[in-house]
Image: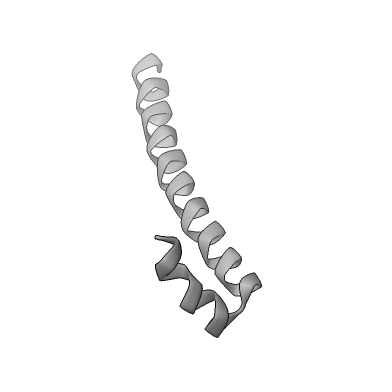
Length: 48
């Protein structure tokens, strides 16, 4: 995997690669958060 990243880092620059990596991680966490919020809404609506 590191061998695949080396050309990308040299072409785009380290800050851009780090920013893209972090954006991909945040996107996954946001999807998980959205699913959790949907579950909470269902639980609250059952209580009401």
